[in-house]
Length: 265
Length: 304
Image (spheres, each protein chain N blue to C red):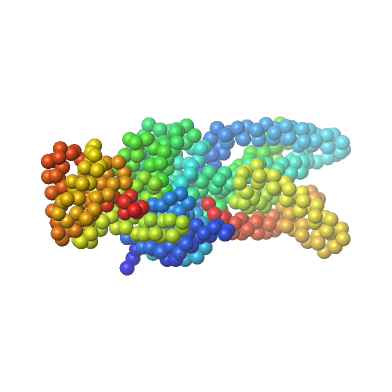
């Protein structure tokens, strides 16, 4: 058998892979995780049925000579998912390191790998988990489209563009929860503070920009600030705003990493 | 010279309170090292700095020549942190496999290693249980099992036997004795007798300051003119024992602070064979003894 003298700890990426595998297992293979997944499936079914599919059918009936269902279906899917998944992040991604720090479990983990590895691995775990849920939601929308009689390569193309944009949109929200989780004591607190930060920051910035129009640039700090612009764009044009969530995510991750490094365990 | 642990003027402040005050010491790899001191002496603070749970306010720390938290120390330093709990979501075996993998074991090896340390801590039957299903003592043993994964060079144990039943406490002491040498243990405990049995070096902290460092083996190599014997008797009249033994050649004083325990101070040059004469005296007086120690007990050395 190996002894520690002949063993060398895995590199940063291998350590992250081990942590991510455990986190994915926590969500998709533990009892608590499965309850979350069932709750997600339940909510998503109703959103898909009423807010996406029925809405699409109504639009199709109102517009004479409308194109295939795919276009409208995925436009509606995108509008719903754009708000649903960031909201989901505030709950599902709220417990990245907070509970482990309060319980002392991080004290064990930091003897095996760095705080950076733990912080980024937990963030990437949440990204992966949310991407799986987004793919599930897009696939279920495709199936609804098929049920509605329009299954085409165009539908697949629309679903891929919508998915890719949702992938980008949720990044700063997961990063914000990573920062809050590294700061506060419980997932509930993290969710609460996320709500506060989101609403108060938006309120203050819009108030400021009313008097000082240049202050509008501060909107760049608020995750989701590009939502209203995104709804007016179609297809690959939506990627023109991709830099906003990417930059926000990067800034938040740097902040979270610093908090994680300095925090006493 | 390369030390296992090297602390130089280590200071830690919590606001206005100074938890560690200019603590300096060095330890070499080998026999277990004890860290003793009353509550609030700074033992857990020192452990936490060594484990990189937080930084010292000032001073220098090196473990195996590296700063705490350095990547070279991953897998080399293990710990039983005070009050830390394992993840309640996963069974013991799963969690220990996870830590073993982070230490560099393959998945298959990690399973073997996790089962090995569970066996050491007599927890094989609980391998598939969640930490929340275990008693306090079992959870502590599981955390110690975690610290024994692989063969770390340094294991820091904060109150390892507190809250354990005598049989499990004995098992942990046996495991520490068995592994000592390849692994150096730094043990914080209030149980002086336990530390006396296990440890060679004793670091005594009080009010954040390192009051003294004792080499236990050196306590037997006493100052020849000021030597001590400590004896614990079954049952005896304190007065008659003191009177009787005080008359032996070379004895300067006989003191008793605990019931039936006596510390005999004598001149080792005048009476190099006092221990044998003492035993003869016990036989003559039909006094039976439980323990005879050359030198003072650790408790006497630290607190008298």
